[in-house]
Length: 430
Picture (tube, rainbow, N blue to C red):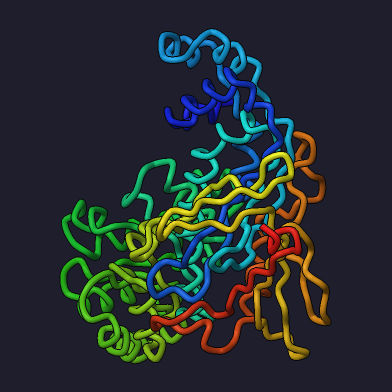
């Protein structure tokens, strides 16, 4: 087990030491994770990384080596407290695969101030990354329609982020990943083909194709754009026969090249050979290829960088102390005090209309309301029967169906549904 306490930020430990010293560290507190706004131009967010957060909280311990490195930075009281640290509070939040909107209480952490404050960095580092990747992947999956998407961005990001990105992409609708660690860790289907280096290794393109077919069978995917695409397709069919599984095109005007490739393959009798394209694709490029005879896509850089939004912009804020609402009043960074309870309202047709947050109380239920928060950790123990990755993937698929038709548009616009915050009488009185 690798301790995730290594992700603790120095300022969290500064607050911890001071709170332990004056006795406020034991006050019962509630922190919430939410986004003040969606990334620019986005109409919905996707909750991803929840299961990874729960694993991180479980593994959040300070081993002797880490504590030794903090000696001289923290006092002995704080070091002793950290040595015995185990989270014994409770966490609830949106199910993984749920949609979120500005103000949505994606995660609610309840415990003593000391226990909860040290989790801020690890929680936000996971959720900000995974939610960003999942939102980008979801937009790409919507643009791709029923055509399969291969996640292949491992070479464009940190080695650990690559595995997390693969997981988030699969949750959001990608079909497979080229990352073997993600496949082994999360049972995600893996796929991949050769790169240009394999073709360049051989004296001729035909020799490279023959070697690949001999090793992997005629159902393999041959990369045909190392030299001349037309010649490459002709050689591929000559070597593998009309039963060739697929050809991949990684450069050029993909829409035009796909049409030409389809015509050429059909003329050679390879009518069942699929066309896979890759090369700096994002959701807009995928949408532009909708009318092209493409059978699948490989997406890398734009996915693992969040397609322009590498972070979801989530924050972790204290909203309640000993049952008393607290809030920031800073200009442009005002927060809404009090613990929130969230429901999503729907028309009889199933279309979502509003996200309603009750501050300090549960909003009155109306027909079509769906509660959004579920128990995740209770008194330090992980809640039972939490959904696995395939179930979270299905949850997102169902949630997207409820959005208004323009909520899935790629063009810039307002959030797909508005968020309404209702205050309790206690809040109004304050």
